[in-house]
Length: 256
Ligand SMILES: [Zn+2]
Ligand SMILES: [Zn+2]
Image 1 (cartoon, protein in one colour):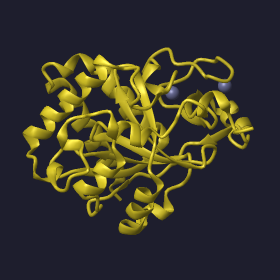
Image 2 (tube, rainbow, N blue to C red):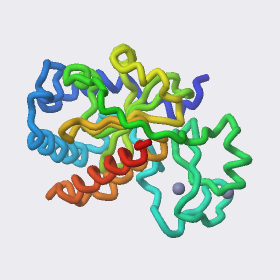
Image 3 (cartoon, rainbow, N blue to C red):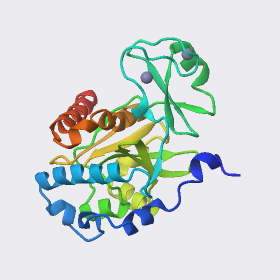
Image 4 (cartoon, rainbow, N blue to C red):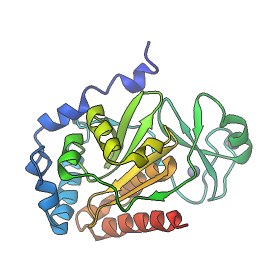
């Protein structure tokens, strides 16, 4: 039996579905369409893409991830997901591997459980990647509907998955492994990407595009941030500021 039928069964070949699903031409695997587009166009693409996702949150674009970080309240009143004790704002996180869910953890639970096969402690490093190489053509081959996502190697799914924001929370697609391998060949830094505990977070809505390796709870936080800022999608400015602030924070943390 597979690792978890409930979690894995729903994901068919999401990548080809997504292409066949008839999204706008900027996502077609046709050459430099994305690169040629200006920042304004990308911003329009973000809003349009989010609207489309909002209109059809249950479509075949990928598996929605119930209870992913986006649903969690931030700030005051967080509790340890393992024992229920209340937590300070600054606390540790564990990735629950089967469900790929971020659990908040108190120090004693972290010490006791971070070695469990069920859990993985989140990574500790942030690496800003100014020279990252991802052409528009390669990006299109991943068929991710939003240029705001993160990729993670999953040890339980034994593949690489992308998580991206939607109004319903995090949505997950398995990546085409041929495209992933080509991306790793172009960017050897990805060979060091730790399975489960780190992600490659990317923002192709900004100019220049922004890339970083970040702890996996930070990656999920981006998805949650977009959900929390969702009312901004009509005007767009609140969401844009939130996204820019998130990536500025990553860059600062990455500074030596
Ligand atoms: Zn606890
Ligand atoms: Zn937490």
